Image (cartoon, rainbow, N blue to C red; front, top):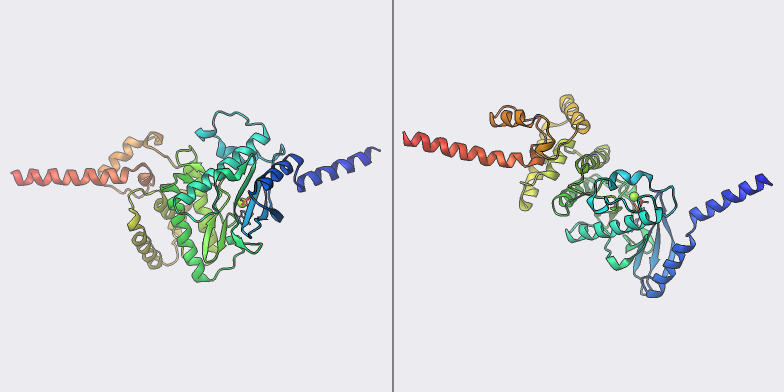
Length: 344
Ligand code: ADP
Ligand code: MG
């Protein structure tokens, strides 16, 4: 009898995990009655934290419904993103999986809207398309066929090169305009549709003020870079990509020429030297300070920079805005010196 109970238990759990639970089903019916969609057709993806379904409206418009899982075990991986996000730091509901699922859904919608507002390609959505842990958004794809993930898209080398440039510009816009870091960006969370790359799965994206934002950004850089490198694209080093994204001194209309210059640099150097490779992996492993307060020997470093010694290792220059500040100081110094010499 004991054996029997066990099997039933297992079967029950499997059914609950695969199918939509009763509470979720109720909400979906409500949304259907309200006309948010007219039919749910099938499952696009089952993931660790959410399932995604394909839905349609009667006039044919296609939608994607992302349903966050509300069972207890699902949210263990996401703590590192939540911690330090002041929007969610009061800790309420931290241990209530339903509450957590609702929060991830809320963040997904909010972040998608921020991306869209900055002109980044992503599914369109709006606040009234969320109920609790359920998010309805534009379906990226056509006639029931979801756009492939970048990982599965099998792009030509021309398309890959274009895609690389498109995604790193989107990463920069995400950082500079949305003030967000994706935090889980890779060929798994980028869709390829009609010649362009779409960013998805943004619920864990963090504010650039998040204490680990720059570490997450560096990971995003590594994942994106590795994918394109593996497929034969001549990519920047991680450090160069990181700097391109965080450097606030590059004007919007200078981005193209910055990247053209970078492309020349990449082609001119050919294969990355062993030294550069090592320097890059050191960068990948090193702690990234966000402000000068975080730098232990900041004073010494500032001394070194103002003495115009080798500043190559001070990779946090761009981040702290010191580079820009220094260029101003230097030109003032030069002016003062010129004035002095012309006075004598
Ligand atoms: P998770 O990775 O947390 O399971 P995602 O948001 O990455 O959730 O979605 C899982 C998969 O569902 C994606 O890899 C993609 O194939 C598909 N998908 C998600 N959103 C859409 C969408 N708006 N249009 C088409 N396919 C989507
Ligand atoms: Mg995903």
